[in-house]
Each structure stands twice: as C-alpha cells, then as structure tokens.
Length: 369
Image 1 (cartoon, rainbow, N blue to C red):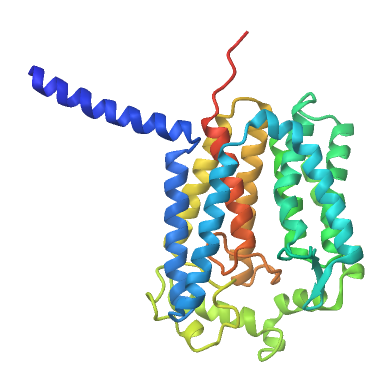
Image 2 (cartoon, helix red, strand yellow; image 1 turned 90 degrees about the horizontal axis):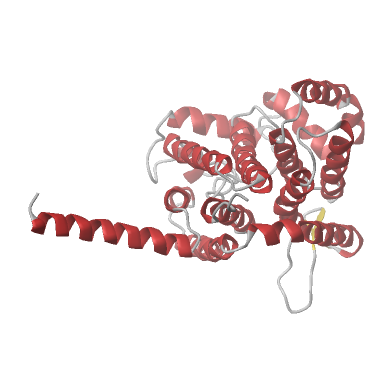
C-alpha cells in the first residue's frame, strides 16, 4: 500500500470514529435508531394508505411522532443510576394519579381514564405506568439476591397487581394487560424458577371462572364474539370478520399501497388504528426485538439488563396482542400496533422506552475494583 492510500484509509477510519464518538456523546445506538426510524416511516406510509390519503390526519400523526422522537432523545440522556434511584418516586407518583383518575378523572366514551389540569391537555396516567412498573420492578430486584426468593416474588406481584387493578377499574383492559406484562417480563428475566411460572399459569387458568364473574358486560361480549363472531356478523362480530378478510385477501405481502379494499370501502371501522399488518412491518419488528434483547445482554449491571429486557418484551407484548387481536385469536382490547396505529400517546411511551434502551446501550460499564 502506498503512503497516499494509507492516508486515505486512515482518513476514512477517522471519519467513522468521529461519527461513532458523536453518537456515543448523544447516547444514541445507531442500529436501534435506524430500525425505529425505518419502522416509523414504514408505518406512516401504510397509515397514509389506510387513511385513504387524508393529508390532514397524516400531518397530525407526523407531528405526534416528531414529538415522540424528541422524548426518545431526552430519555436516552438519562443516567441509569439516577433512574434506579428515582424509580420508587415515579411509581408512587403514578399510583397517586391512578387513584385520582378514579376519584376525579375525566370521562369519555364510557371510561374514566384521564386527568384534566386547567390550562393543560388531559392525559392518561396509565401510560406512565407502562414505564414506571418495569422501572420499579427492575430497581426492586436489582437490590436483592437472584433468582428471587418466594417472599421477593410475592412483593413483586403486589407491585404489579396494584396499578394493573386500578387501570382495570377505569376500565382499560388493554393498558392493564400491557402494564402487567411489563412487570412480569422483568420478573421472568430475573431467573424465576420455571416450576413457579408453571404454577402461576395453572392458577391463572383456575381463576378464569372468577374473572368471568367480575367482567363487565361489554368485556364478556368481546370474549363471546371471539369464540363465535359469525353469531352476530353485522354487529359485535363485524370487526373480527372484516379484519380476517383484510388479512386473507392481502396475503403475505398485502395488496399494495392505496389498494386495500376493506379499509377504503369502510369495511374496517378502525382501519387507521388497530387493523394494519404486513409482512415487511413484521420483519422490522423482529429486528427491533432482536436488537433490544442484544442490548439487554450487554447491560452494565443487573438493573440495566432487567430493565432493557423488560422493555423489549413489553414491546413484544404490544405486537403479539395486536396481531392476535386482528387475527381473531384474542378479544379486541384496544392495544395499538406499535409505531403504526393512529394516535400519539402509545408512540410517546414506546419511544421513551426505546430512549431508555439507548441509554442502556451507550452508558459504559463501571470499572472493576
């Protein structure tokens, strides 16, 4: 190699190193950032098609995603040690707000899920718990011997059940499931004995009759509709039947942009929110999950690994519940398709979680003593 070639190679390497240092200073994980951007962009295109080229609604969603990305960048700068210290405060604040929702919350569409502060937009405290619960559980477990003892497991289950029950009373079954799943994911990653997991599953099955007794009428109807949607094809079963037709007619690769008959002919009542699923998007989701789990394995300490793994599995729960819901495998519970369904609240929470993942990926491990 000539001296000139060596200098050119060194210059390219220096440029790459500078980019890497710049990303590290901003606490940005390039593979995760690229995947999130690609997924959001793909989702916007698919959503634009589902909205039948409604430019105003598209701009509104773009603005919400832009705000969510700003939140992600801010979350990526958070110090993990500070997050661990403040986890009980965030959890306690969220619990107080959930109680306030039940006492003085704003009602809309038969549910009481929001808090209204004069001069500010109303907001859902339950969204905060999607992050506060895994933070609290990871912080709690990180200070104790692992695998957890029976006493520790009972304490963690109480930490998970309290917010999930309060959210379920609003009622908001979808968010309650996500909050509980976020906590359970962290507990599972802590090295929980599998015989305990099996026992919990059996107890859950045994509790189903009791759960049926306390369910509201509309929740029971959703379960009955899932089992036999054709019993009311023009009423309660309409959503599931039409979503199955949309998935079946599109096949693995979909019909193409602006060609979806079920959405454009208004057969899908919420085509811009819950009923969007294509193979390319699922591939991006798989890559996001893979990167998130890899980051979890590289965490600098127990808290970082549990938190990153829990957030990644929570993202998987979003995806699994939505896909199973629109495929007719689970009742419709209002869980949005991540980074695609119309609305900004879930995107804000998800991207804040991705920001925390980037903090885990970029903050160095402490030096060994």
